[in-house]
Amino acid sequence: MRLLFRSTRHSGTPSVACVSEQPVASQTPGLRVLFIATYPEDTAPGQRYRLEQYFPAIRRTGGEVKLSPFYTRRAYQIMHGPGRLPFKIGMTLWGLARRLWDLVRARSYDAVFIYREASPLNVYAVEAALLAVSRYSLYDFDDSIWIPTTSEANRRFTFLKSGDKIPRIIARADRTLVANPYLEAYAKEVGGRVQIMPTTIDATTYDRVIEYRTTSPLTVGWTGSNTTLEYLVELIPVLERVFDRVPFKLRVIGGNELALQTKIPVELVHWSSELEVADLLSMDVGINPMPVGPWTRGKSSLKAMQYMALGIPSVCVRYDFSEALIRDGENGLLAEDDREWEEAILRLLADSALRERIGRSGRDTICADFTNVVQEGRFLKYLAGREVPPFIPGQGDWGN
Image (cartoon, rainbow, N blue to C red; front, side, top):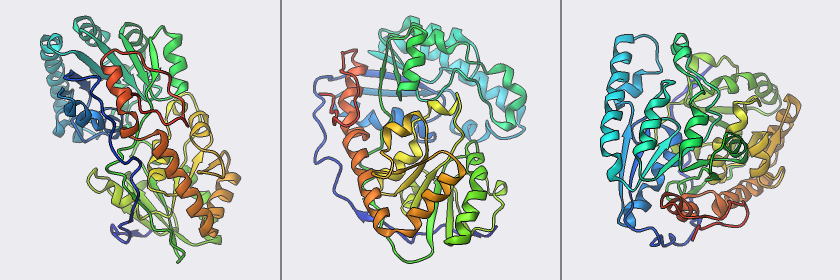
């Protein structure tokens, strides 16, 4: 495998904004919200896309935001790695102490918003106490988190992780927000008062479109983390067959290069929030592979949404949510088996007009339904405990 340094070949072209102005959210003025999450601000993609990108909207209406992470920034960098057991125990105890302080101050906020869980331990008492003292409580999740998972480095502590507390949190919260219909069905089954709040892209950050190049070699790209890199590794044989017919470069954002062994030239890019968009803009085709099962069916194709927001034509695994997001052959391509993956990637690499047509249509899809600007009114109403019509893609829901 050949590793290349980060490239700034594409700066992208300025795009017409998804919306010309931000919606007025004066119907929910002055809310004070305590957000309970696992990680510090601007470190975890899930938090950024589910809640942090709405913080400016809350403040713009005169409200107050307080994010209370379980882990410090230093702990975040260490917790999923090997070793350092005394440090990990200490940071977990620190997080539990912080939750005691959250219990004291929760009543002074208009709403308490729990993202995924209040603590990483299978102890319902922490969430139960927060929900009990809250004036109004919201619970939000965007994965099949009732199925426990742990990183490889912390596999021996699997017994501390369990999904047993998740249905109890859902049943107790005043309102549960989920990212897609698969998660909605589960939440309703366990007694939740549930509504869909789609995962959205930051319209201000994703304000550019790739240059649709015709010169070779093109770049096929993937973005993710160490935990999802295995999905890309499983696709390497398919990518190598494509490479034998149409040479290309493979850009990998995030993950560990040691897991990638391939004859394809690889550009390895360490993920950072500051350079995320710039790094994505170097892609000509984006791919989102993963196995389809109970855990992955709860995902909302965030990778595909990121690609589409920048006009990058994408190939995504065919499953529940991707079939709702992507109209195969129109705003993206779907693939189920190795043959379909090979054919889809080859189609895009061989046809520049198809790449541009699908890329621009994909961006239109994101602009219509899946940006924070379009959905911030809905989010603010949820925080205020107001009734909101069901989210229906294709109707451009401003939530006003």
